[in-house]
Image 1 (cartoon, helix red, strand yellow):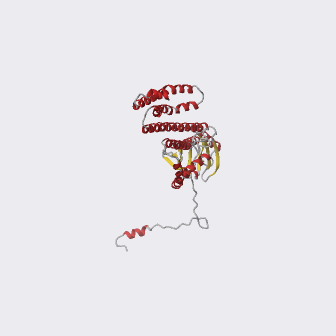
Image 2 (cartoon, one colour):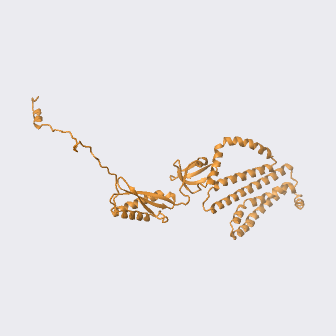
Image 3 (tube, rainbow, N blue to C red):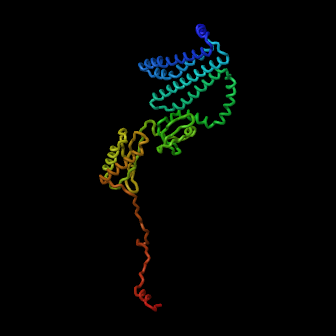
Length: 370
């Protein structure tokens, strides 16, 4: 440091400061263009993904730290006024702490997402902990920056306990949503991309899971935001778990007297003709019972995604109708037999109605008739 002081000691401090800051920015550019580029080549040649992520996240903090080094060391090698030196030291450390906190938060988020992807879709609550990690990084960075500027943190921590009680009462719904999100994660209720149906009748695909709420995209392309506290106490049907395949039931009625083998062959052939029907498990036909107007059948098929169920039912109904028409299978419609109550001898009680006398009508029409 004495050598550096000897070199810059002969300059006026503004000139020396400009030279140091300019040199540090030039060094930052060299680190970014040469050093990190070489590191990326080395990381690309390995079979590990960790080094690639690490080098990618160093693109900002490493050059930024080198860039502010000149401002940080300037007060030690130049005759800079104490007030200016205070702001140079504080500003340089603030920038360094902020960029490194940002890099650490992003690296932790990458690691969390990598774990989420490697878990074969059994999790999906990375957004919740991503927000927690971001909050923790901001809190630690904020405390470090306050310490850099000489602001005591202990009184703030002491008052935070009292303020926390007041905030807890004021934000009890937010706290309930937070713990609801943790409970949903522990129970592995659903993950991003799952198709769920709530007991309120709301259904949709999970778009995002945050600390406060979960967003669902309905089939009408409408986003519904549901608080996690509500979801934690609601009955949720997850059509995407444990696998994305879901079963569709198509009720079919045929007339009495229909050939059962022909009916079942037509139903299975209709299922095979629809592309969205999965081959495994194979389609099945079940004779459920004797209805009022016909024989009750049910066609059971599996579709590859819950969102394809309505489209699959539409295609199956068309295929079944066409094949029944070709095979001469009659689809019954409701019929009712009306029994008319009669008298004791079995005859129908009817009232005699006599037609008017034609001659009397003619007399009535003659002039002078009474």
